[in-house]
Image 1 (tube, rainbow, N blue to C red):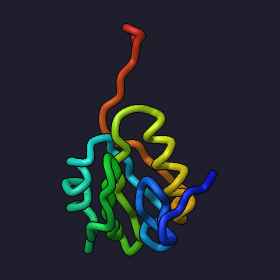
Image 2 (image 1 turned 120 degrees about the vertical axis):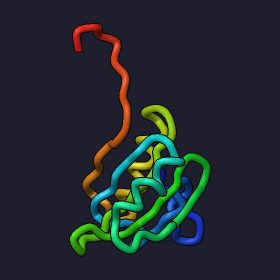
Image 3 (image 1 turned 90 degrees about the vertical axis):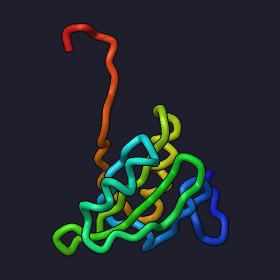
Image 4 (image 1 turned 135 degrees about the vertical axis):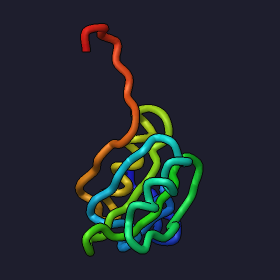
Length: 103
């Protein structure tokens, strides 16, 4: 079920044209501004709950940074809604855990 509010995706509060094709996905909303400083002309776009978004350019190509919060469900919501906004390439950045000692 696709949910929109005033033409924006319900959770991330973004619409078509708000994000680049490429999106970096940290978990922590506090990391978005730090990562966005590495983009050219980065602008704050939206904030709703755990979802904070900045969009700028890298070598002239639009790139966005959107936090996903903690866990797979909130990450899935972010990716699905970002896809509906025009993004199609996602890179998770940050830490991850595992349960196998030999990894």
